[in-house]
Length: 158
Image (cartoon, rainbow, N blue to C red; front, top):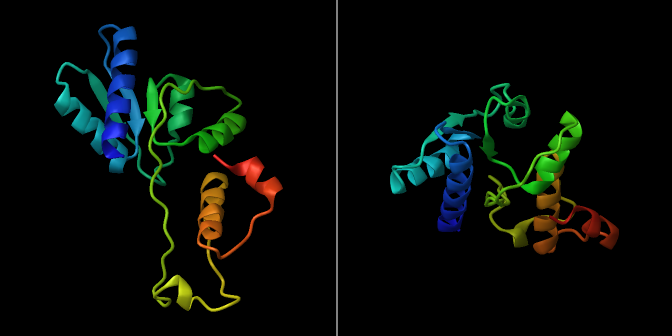
């Protein structure tokens, strides 16, 4: 999966960098793992002129707002459902040049040691943002903990 992400970003970066001529390609990315992947891509292809703009969580700057304002040329951090939410929120439409990998999602507990040991009626916390909420619901369904209605599945499956 990591090689796919690296090659996808390398291809994207080369395509966009060539269209920008002499200017470096300014890409907004979260520090881990996306900025690290871009740094690796630069090591693979030293001719690639990238300027990675690291975005920290809670830092106040939104990579999509920077892209809309022209402060960066591309961003590398989101999947399509999040992008669609951002387009609605910002009143903008962005082009998807390449798909990116999706970060792993898991089920964690300090108290419960296995899903089989999860008590009936237990409370489970899920993310409160649209895209990761749907991912967590699908994970819970895949593990047999909940059953989603088909209407919800069709509307939110990414």
